[in-house]
Length: 115
Image 1 (cartoon, rainbow, N blue to C red):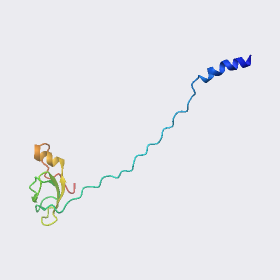
Image 2 (image 1 turned 30 degrees about the vertical axis):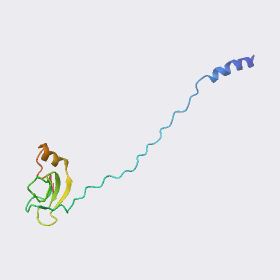
Image 3 (image 1 turned 90 degrees about the vertical axis):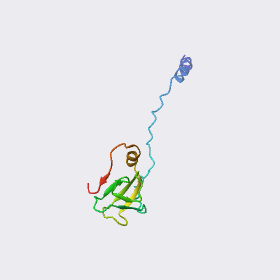
Image 4 (image 1 turned 180 degrees about the horizontal axis):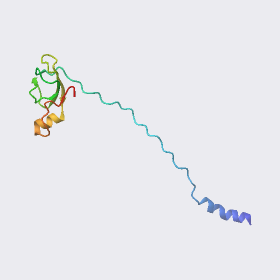
């Protein structure tokens, strides 16, 4: 009798789903990506700073940037004039948008040093 009961119940217990352990979350490791380096100011830009102005960052369309210049570039000016008084950071989107579409505000200066 017990053998018959075992033969009948064994297939029934095998049909029950097995409780699988819950999967353990794997820690996500992000690659160590360094921040991009800050843009270098190019002193070979052939521009000069107007004398007596506030040092700072100016768009190329500003009268404070003298010499050879691009109106869409951003320039760092010393306010002293002469060699190495101006360097270029290249295209700045806000300078480009104002120059090409008159969008935004005129940025003369974009930022004055010391603020």
